[in-house]
Image 1 (cartoon, rainbow, N blue to C red):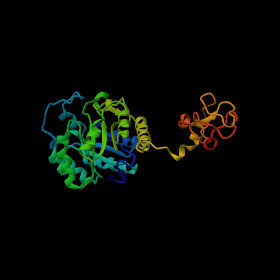
Image 2 (image 1 turned 180 degrees about the vertical axis):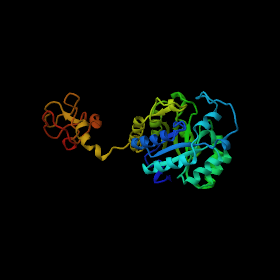
Image 3 (image 1 turned 180 degrees about the horizontal axis):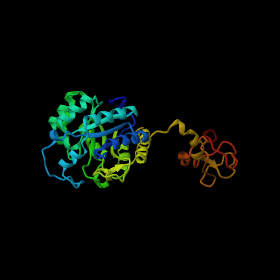
Image 4 (image 1 turned 90 degrees about the horizontal axis):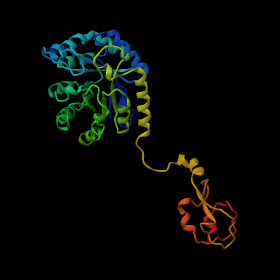
Length: 341
């Protein structure tokens, strides 16, 4: 377990739900502020954006992401927020009782966030094997939530070793970097693999499907952190809008994840609280006709019937057959052990 602000992150606590605003603001701070309000109203604990200091992040290029129609260089220059924009969004989020996080995509971006006094850092899947950046981020001594899309156990291990050496709390988010992710490629089974490889890590899911269902399924499998892209309006432009959820869906995600968390765990035992149901639902051995004193019990004169308030339950029915009774029993009498010779 580790603390992210005032929120404990761990298996014993309800999942931390992150609304990833990301770049869904399309460079417009007013949109970002609206999403902060809508996310707070939906009940999430964390809002997250992305911090892009483009010159420190990449060289000029014409690579077009699979979920976009413009080069990444042009896109990031268009949507990048200023340091003052981010300061104001952070202040707004904290006024609404939310933890503000951002994903730094460069050393300069991490430095900016550290200067803002963030409670922790989110590292995206593309930086999972960017060990120099992870080491730089870990040096600030704040918790790290690390997405692991496009990486396997072998490439995740050095990142985890860096975080362990820095002594920071950390969570590993399973992720499939397809936009959108088909359900059959979500692979929730990876959570068990991550737990086996990194038992000291908190686990979660960063989901890129078009529904909240995989996140809910992940909670049942032990996820402590849930992240989905967030938008106030599905009609807004932006490459991540198609894999985003609305405020209403996030409200369902928060409620559902808490319910499933409360329901998981435990063991297969009979609860004391089930006794009132046992009293009517169990079957007990009863006479089906009048039985005379000394008469043997047979399938013809005893059977099992509700309620469950009798002394001899249905599980012991066969053991009574052939035994004589010590007193006369009218029909529909619950047989007791003292009635047997």
